[in-house]
Image 1 (tube, helix red, strand yellow):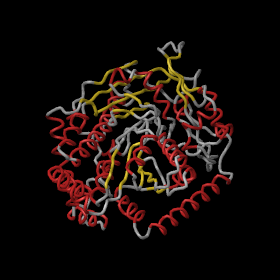
Image 2 (cartoon, helix red, strand yellow; image 1 turned 120 degrees about the horizontal axis):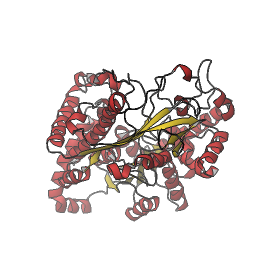
Image 3 (cartoon, one colour; image 1 turned 30 degrees about the vertical axis):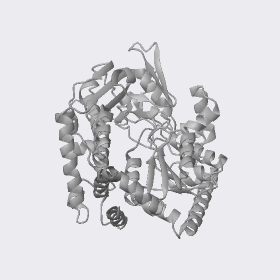
Image 4 (spheres, one colour; image 1 turned 90 degrees about the vertical axis):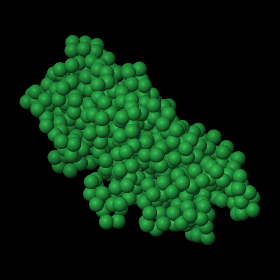
Length: 528
């Protein structure tokens, strides 16, 4: 354990990199498995460790970041009780009380998890806890933590950016600096809330009526829409893992391991290059095993359908007669005031209006995570966190690569609106192609509940095995889904903050009440 303390110190000083820390933890865990009886005796005589309960919140299944934080904290001599994924608030709090934990850590990746974290905070307050609550995960932010979560709990609520910050944060919450750290943390919360209130008080947005008056202008009369080569649903079962691996974007993989920079330049970095190369070689070796031994099963489904926009929504038709509506999908519009020649965009702007031209839209879902739990459990039984995290990170990359490959197949073959495309992998990563594949829950269409429409439209669960949780996270987690829009002017953008008038309008269109709309659109609300 003294050796792991040194590893933790070196990591905190930036002298060791995350993969090296996780590898060191693998050695520690294997040693501990043999030494448990002796360690228990030592615990009886020695000082007790600080205890943390960590979990991915209810409705969310993403755990790579949480697993990394768990390992890093254990390397720094903290006792971590990892409750896994999709854990309800009451179970998290019950476990913390049972163990007399020193703090609770929450993780989440999808935006509905932000609401769940807020609920956990309010439940901790209701049950009279006072221990620190740590907030982390890709969807979290300092601003949201201060504005939405902290007001619900009188105990310390602390945003933790990533694994590299987790150790110093936890140490500050148990050491001599605890009082001053909490005081500064509370001051930071107050400052962020004041800035948030000040921004909201500024008249920097349009009514939804005026925002629609500034929608994207497209001269549809001069645009030739390409009729898809194949309409309807197609099962995608003809791409091998080897095919898919050629489309991997490696930079997000290195980001997941806390490397900063670009790929492949990171491999030559003076400071991080050696560690990055070792990680890359380990990843390629494991990837070779995944491919040659067929550990994972890629599955995909795609559908191309006749469609037209009606205001901010899109009607999807059963067939080319366009007489029967198969599905209606709903989108939001930007409400921020724009400069001259800038539009208040909505994704529906890039699909031809009804009674104008006959346009189309696509939907897809892919996964590379089928069977992953079998191999994840194999590594965990061997106390091999490093290989387990590596496996899950590679599965995520393969899912994104599958989505990239399939989008190319759509453009050049299945839909065929750009049959002459000739792009290399770098061009694909830089999105130099025509069309987009926006995903429900992401900035251009932030409502995760629209996944339900996508699942129904192309029967995703039956055709791929991908399921949705109650908060619309996909499982297996190594999955990607979205819409296909073909217009050459279409691009990715963020809806940003929306006003109450649009929330009411959106709720009416979807058949929701206002409260339900506010729940699912919470991160985008300008007025709460």
